[in-house]
Amino acid sequence: MQENDFDKRVRDMMESHGELPPADSWNNISSSLIRRRRGVVLRRGFGSLAAVAAAVALFFVMGGGDLFTSKPELPVLNAGISQKDMPKEKIAVVEKQQPEIADAGSAVKRFSSVKSAVADKNTQANVTVTAKAGDVTTGPEAAKQIVKQIAKEPAVAENTGQKTDANKEVKKDTKEKIETGERKTLEMVEYEESVNSKRFKLNKPLLAFSTMLSPSVSSGSMELLSRANTGHKDMFSSMDREQIPYENLYDTKYMPPVSVGFQVVLPVDKRVSFGTGINYTLLYSYTDVQNRNGSERQEQTVHYIGVPFNLYVNILESKGFRLYANTGVMLEKGLALKYKVIGDIPENHTQSVSGVQWSVGAGIGGEYMVHKNLGLYADPSVSYFFPGGQPVTVRTVQPLQFKFEVGLRFHL
Amino acid sequence: MTVRHREYSNEKEVIEGCVKRDPRAQRILYDSYSSRLFTVALRYAGDRERAKDILHDGFITVFEKIGSYNGSGSFEGWLRRIFVNTALMALRKADVLKNSGELNSVAGEFSDNPSALDEISSKELLKVIASMPDGFRMVFNMFAIEGYSHQEIAEELNISESSSRSQLSRARVWLQERIRR
Image (cartoon, rainbow over all chains, first blue to last red; front, side, top):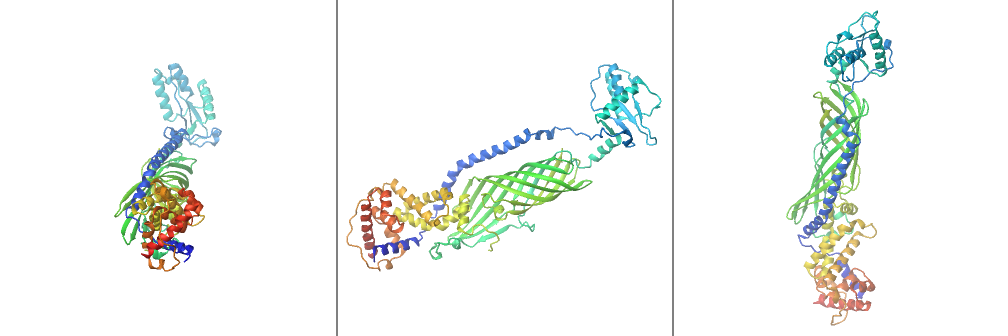
């Protein structure tokens, strides 16, 4: 036998031989990997928290804090509407602000500037009246009370023939007030106050708390996904089955994702609104491994935190209930991946998750007002999770998922 | 058990999972290659304890550097090169390689008898190789099994090319004698 042939024979025998390593070898290796990544996990964890805190702070700096401080405003009539086009209803001028009244004299002037016009339904003419200067009795406080009283009560029709200097002044003030758009009808005010208690305050921001369950199958079943790998002997073309010391059977199951979060919804107009907030998702799966030496279970838990950006468009609205379409994107960051092995050689470690998870979704939802400011909503939707170097979870195995979100909305 | 969803069904996906540091992918990779790579470690280490350390260090290096594997060449070959380098580093630290140039005396000559290797199992052959003197073991493993050239062996072991050639010839004779026994 030539030396080269001898070398080749030895090489062939060694390359096809497999010597079983010590049983605790993998445990030592994984422990070393954990120690190496522990510092990375802490650094990335703090970085993620800092990024989320910065996003929330930026939200409030950009005006999000105004959502909780803005005062409701009642709509006003168009200042350009002429009298003949005005509805034949009682009309009253509501003074927006009542300045401090120093003395009775200035109170008289203030009274004369409070214009109330009454249009009797049975007449075509609009009659304007003013509070009489003589109604002033005592000092500024009394004047304030009278002003308030006039604003609440409908004005009494007066003989239009009586034209006084006060009326002229009132008419002038009234005209000014019309031009500034401060006129509205009493009935409109009463109507809105009664309706607002029942109607969706679409012009006001909403605060929503929600939870989400994702069955992860398009059929809507809550059944766990189950898949199995009957051994990796067929995976690697270079492996010879006869030389493998043992073969492993893998059976992996994925739990449906569970999410909780809160969202602030800002109105764009009467039909469209925009929502964003913070969302937490838990992804859990386990793998049962069996071989000739025994069996073990490998559990994986991944924690995600994300920021959704949603658009809502009302489709149908009736008393106490509304139907809407929604679409949006969500950006999520994995906080940590926990890996646990239950078996002869248990192990438990946590590692970081690199990259981000993008997803898009769309669906149709409904909200029912259970209280004046409290709505119960349900949003079934479909989401697609884009691959982005994320750990193997139910999202990577089945990117297209059916989601069912339920929650409460507080109308501020 | 039925397969309903694709997870790790080929080598490429396992490698991608290891790049993502998926513990399950790493375990699959370890289960698939640990026996062969432990054999490599045993051939160089000479004893199981040192081979276990080489196995540990080798896989740590594999998982840390797996992102650099660009798909050119076989993945098993890439793994073997890492483990050979890891073994040489470990032996260099233990001052085992400093005696690689010493020419141990051997009796006899290389035989052309082809039946020498037919009468021994691969497990027994591994034991014989692991028991070789350090110098013989290093040169024979690197040249005959790994395919290093004498120039590369000389650079790694800090010996001359002529020493490498001499060690190889003597290693073959020594191995044949042990196989016949």
